[in-house]
View 1 (cartoon, one colour):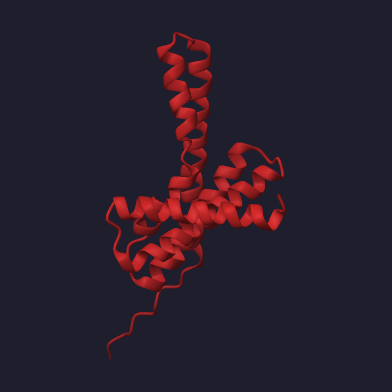
View 2 (view 1 turned 180 degrees about the vertical axis):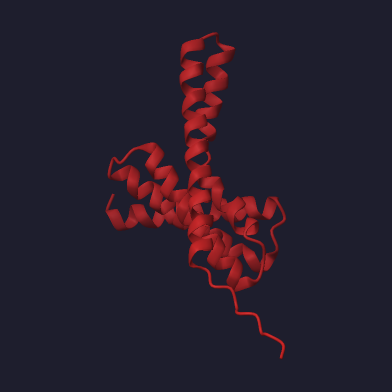
Length: 152
């Protein structure tokens, strides 16, 4: 499959899955499109880094950083809370299949595999959290608050 087609498929499905989750959690309609683009941008960064074999943790961290920065920019554009864009955008990065496999291994009695998979889920969740933390840090360092007018 050509690279351009792969990118188109990845962006399309990440955009649609983000919007579908945003609809489920009642994100306002005027924020749906930008929430979808935040999720697609984060997934595209994750997918691109995974294609370059950089590692799952770095890919999740930079994907979450991208979602966080998009969320901050979009929240300022739409004058809405950042969480409206961040939570739906996070959906493509959530390690749901790995968490399922961890629980399944636990139920089947394979404790070593369950522990390994649970640790991987925790590491990915931590990388996502650090990505959002860095996005907030970058936003606070670069945002200039309007100067207050002094009364005479």
